[in-house]
Amino acid sequence: MPQLRLSFAILVLLCAFPRDLRADAEILNVSYDVTREFYKDIDAAFSKSWKDKTGETVTVSQSHGGSSKQARAVVDGLQADVVTMNQASDIDMLHELAKLVPADWQTRLPNHSAPTTSTTVFLVRKGNPKKIRDWSDLVKPGVGVIVPNPKTSGNGRYSYLAAYGYAIKNKKTPAQARAFVTSLFKNVPVLDTGGRGATTTFVQRGIGDVLLTFENEVFLIKQELGGENFDVVYPSLSVLVENPVSLVDTVVDKKGTRKLAQAYLEFLYSDEGQAIAIKHRLRPRSQSLLAKNPEAFPKLKLFTVEEVFGNFKTLQKAHFDDGALFDQIMTELHKTP
Image (cartoon, rainbow, N blue to C red; front, side, top):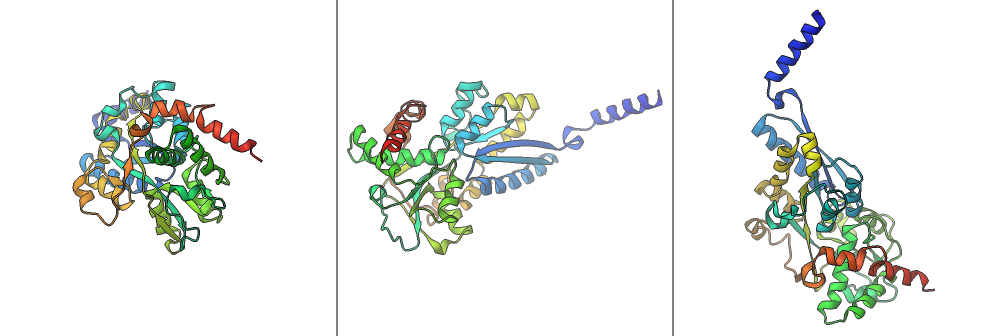
């Protein structure tokens, strides 16, 4: 009986204190694989901001990999409180396959729930020995192109879309655009599953003449892996990459973390969050901050996914579903002697 009374007393005391004084909170951010460093800084800044506001200590755990692989992992049960991806189709997947988010998830935050943008650029070896200037140079014989697999990586998918869109915007027919992309992938010696794996192949293994990757990944490579060894090439035209985010509703409601997870996503739009994006060469939505950092982001000619492909659902079916155009291209290349 004394032990029972003691346990009851402890329970009463715990209930008397606010949640932030009783226990720390934790959320999981499942993201694509070239954002590790960005979200490491975001997580530290958000945790401090939350602590200052509420007194609660927050831990934000991270999971990174190929964007589509990550989305599939969440569908299969990975308990993400939030997902921070690089293409809307990966978050649509959470609704379509498991009803983890509502169909209208893009309406819940500004800019279609995409707090940052990027684009696909080229990283070449110092001095650009193959004289790679634009997409048309990537299909020349003897040019080794490193790009992750568009079936598993949003990074690779945007490279595919940029190449196809370049052809269409230069008044090529869909058949000619397909032939152009086929020629490009003929020059790809290995398809890594994610952007970071492709970076390792190009930078550390020394394979290929050009790496197709996000603008922010190029900055990171030059900063951390030896900028003196590489040059950045901005093509004449590229694709606008929007980086959408969302709560995973079924998870946050089960764990009771909706308020915290929502605050985390909203922090990405704050001046502090946008400034961290700039530090990592992700293009901010804040036009005032963008205008103050012209040296960080060269002006580019970009097209949107909607301009060329209609929307992500349409392009997924036409280009990336099993048996769709990309699979047909790879089958064709594997048959080629």
